[in-house]
Image 1 (cartoon, rainbow, N blue to C red):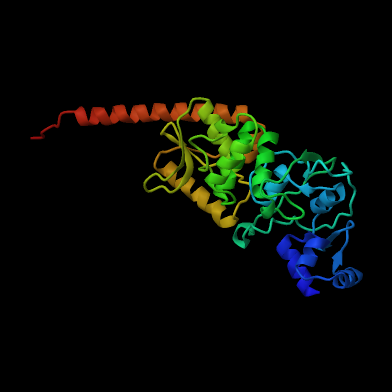
Image 2 (cartoon, helix red, strand yellow; image 1 turned 180 degrees about the vertical axis):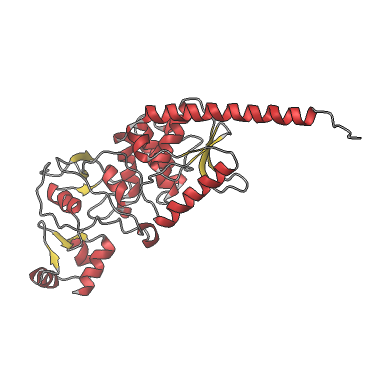
Length: 330
């Protein structure tokens, strides 16, 4: 029985009976496992472990696989703010249940099997909210990289690019590269395969921001005319998320996945050191970036303007000091 659970864990806690047969499980072993409560049969042709989560069960009950932004979440990739469950189905699917009701297993969300243990640490899968599923009719572009219950990473991103607002789509590309889920060549292949004009989603910032909110912050400032340098390391101060117009540093708080107390205090230590050197630091939260951008934008404008005034005054004072004739005291 433990062998079956190991196989289910490697497959992502849910699999078709045909897949388990291919891995050596017999119908008798599957019947015995379900009779003992070691595994469940949520739908004909499927087997899941007790670790399978609510969204997985809903996707199976709906007649599809987890796809689009919901699949991105399982890969640790930025997926925007939509709380719906997105599923992928083929056009030949005979019947789709758009608002499936399933028993809530009350367990944590299941990561995609390709996500390493290191990246799972201190991170949680954000499950979907209630309501009807969002259905996408797709053919998987990399079926060999898919699982029974979830589409391949390339298909997830290709679908999400058409589903997300464009700035969130750019952030998803950044995140896929930063997390190492897809290569730049695979990103280019996805963009080439997606109908429409999606090439502008790739720009000089692509792959540099380390979180989705950071991607939004950087590109919004660039569109407003600021000169933004992402991921800078000013001498003697430490590494920051970026610098604005050469005079204000920034750290975007509230990344999707924070590593805990150590990173929390390290971030604030860098801020204190920076301010001790007279360099201002802006620390917008994810909530502010997502829900109150006008406030963030106005704050940036004020802090940058003030920093430029201070720099100008310091430069003038330095010039006056260097230009003053030395005095000889008798």
